[in-house]
Amino acid sequence: MIRAILIITLVLGQAAWAAPTTSKRPVQRGGNVVLPVEVAPSGAIQAPVGDAQTQDAREPKSGLGFSLRPLFRSRKVEKTARAQRALQAKGAVCGDVAIQGENIGRVKGKLRGCGVEKAVRVRSVSGVTLSQSSVMDCVTANALKTWLDKSAKPALSRKGGGLKSLRVAAHYACRTRNNQKGAKISEHGRGRAIDISAFRLADGSEVTVLKGWNAKSTSKAMRQMHQGACGPFGTVLGPKANRFHLDHFHFDTARYRSGRYCR
Image 1 (cartoon, rainbow, N blue to C red):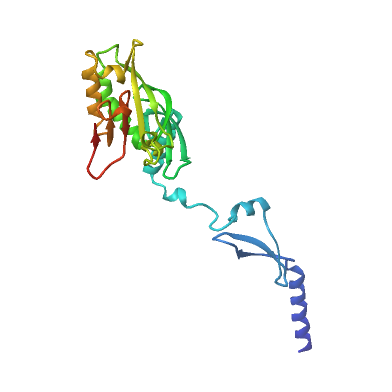
Image 2 (image 1 turned 180 degrees about the vertical axis):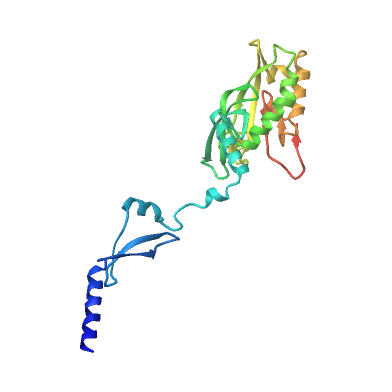
């Protein structure tokens, strides 16, 4: 009996001496990543096995470890974003390459009621330059484009080689209507208006509202442009409106319950 016990003890002792000092046991780490770590015979976990940089790359930095936004961004959204960036690179504003200028964002006014939320500074529209870069919102810029394409350019197409530029008398300005004390805030103060006093043609000649309105050679074209603005713009004022508009057209995109106001 004693001999048998001695034999068993000897075999177990040899097995213990032959066993490795450590063993590799997979341990669950964050997410679904499994990294091998060193486990001593006592069961204590020692330093992880493998390259430290590899482990850092596998572990998420924070939260989910990556943004889900690209996964849910449709091709249509990506295409639209690329198109917008391409237009901006060409100097376009309001999403239209025909309207050239720059985005200037929010414009604050000194008076209550003034200001523009998403303003643009327009240099040219449909190939027609403005005498001064004009601040307005995109609704007004688009209305100006519609009027130029459908009314102003066709009306002057047979005169002096066609329309080349507009003389801008006023655009954004934080002021009251007609600069009258106590009056309501003008649409100019909201970035919704533009005043035009003259039209320069390709040959260098110029037609002013003051003289051209009643001139035999241009009266028809002037009235055509005035009438054509009533639609794209909510308010259209010219020489027949009042004494304040004898020398320019006033266009704005305000809308009223009674509809458009054109005089």
